[in-house]
Length: 243
Image (tube, rainbow, N blue to C red; front, side, top):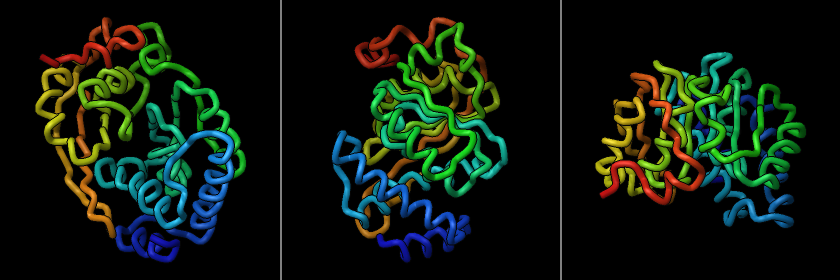
């Protein structure tokens, strides 16, 4: 997917694609590849692949959560790595308020430099474990309209990391590949325990490759019990609802 095809795909979906925004994506690509030579941010570095498998893949979030177009909406991206999916969505909607939490400080350093270079406002970066970031005394607990994570962990683990961050009435969107449906079966009881309810699963394919994508949309219907998330490492070692 080259820049022209990327712009055409944005236009076809009715998404913002002003020349200044397309220039920001070009700069994002350039900064990513340059930083990737010093630290391991991504295995995907060829331009067309980055546009398709990072930028366009991230933007699929808009199909599950069109509310990202709302100015001031608070989005928390857990384990964003090189900024996916939140920063490509932020480039489309500059008024979005983005918080990124990642456990690796080098990645946070890259995202800080990138945000400054792209002239982004309202991007808040935290070097922390998601389990501590959403802890019962944390100011971030139940503070966000939307939480998301892309390919970070199985769905029952992701739910424990993300749902405690979402306010009642907000949503959590898990961006999954081909295993979304099978993970969902295992995660339903975990999601319910954490105050969530699955309201929609959107199955899509990436253009060109046909790679499957599954966006699982979870509504936060009641407050997360205080014992969640459990201490760092526990959600992945002993996932909720796993038998």
